Amino acid sequence: MNAAELLEKATDPLTTTDLASGGLLNAVQADRFIDLVVDRSVMTKQARIIRMSGPQVEIDKINTSGRVTVAKSEGVDPGTRQVPVFTSVTLDTVTLMTPFEITDESLEDSINNGRLEDDVIRVMASQTGEDLEELGIQGDTGSADAYLALLDGWRILAENGQVVTWDGGRVSRANLMTALLAMPDKWHRKPLKWYFNPQVTIDWTQSFADRETAMGDSTATSGVAPPFHGYPFVPVPLIPTDVIGTWGYEAGPVLSYGFLTFPDNILYGIQRAINMEKDRDIYRGVNEYALTTRLDVEFEEDDAVVLILNVGRPS
Image 1 (cartoon, helix red, strand yellow):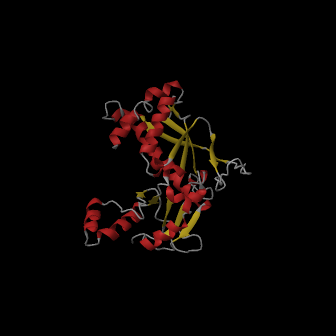
Image 2: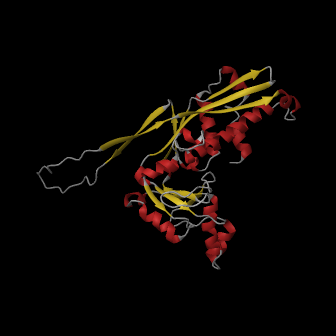
Image 3: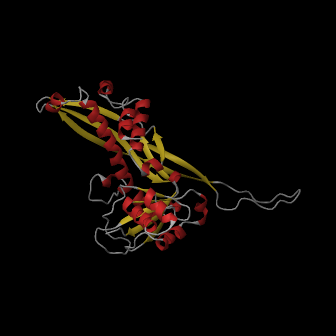
């Protein structure tokens, strides 16, 4: 879906006519806004979207502690009963605001046939989608960045799973194998995917494109990163490439990181009570706007995530 189609899709929930009702988007408008947020993202689009009716929700899980099947003898009670294990994951959202303004001069000088206000609202909403994904990935309550410190994103949460470090090594079969072997066996039945910054996936792709083979020609032409052990690569632009070394590896801000997990394990909770409010500052001659959303992210199963740290990239 291209940018024009996204803006068209967002027309209903994001026009000035919706501001007269106090700013709270109705259920249809809120769902379309959430669709816009998802469509503007990459890793979020892979995630399981939880459309929350309140600021907190529990995702129930039912598991077993192991084997539940026993031998059967006719007329004999097996003498044991298995009990399911009930656990849950809590999504507890934080409140986020996108504040912006448009001057009277901009509105008067607009060549958009009076549509400038609506166009700006939709563009700001689109950018909000990217900002939410940035927080979902890079959020860290210990960050010096006030925005990223609002919550712990998938990078920090993944530390509760399996962690491997490449110590500055670039993507290669040997390094990918270390991550693959770190994934517990029971999760290999799931549709696992590799999530890396595009520079890392291009580096992997180029290692095939340089080969003088039919596969090399195909990779060079298509630009599609070949899977590793059947698991595809997902290029995620908002995974940074200027990370400082961690987990015992010291290096300057030249590194990246990645994830190995399956899409349904990535949880993205966004509350449907979305506000789009408008006010006016008559002294400054501007219209002021505030788009308010609530967000939280999690992994359903920490055990099913491999966090790959200290990933080198092409220089």
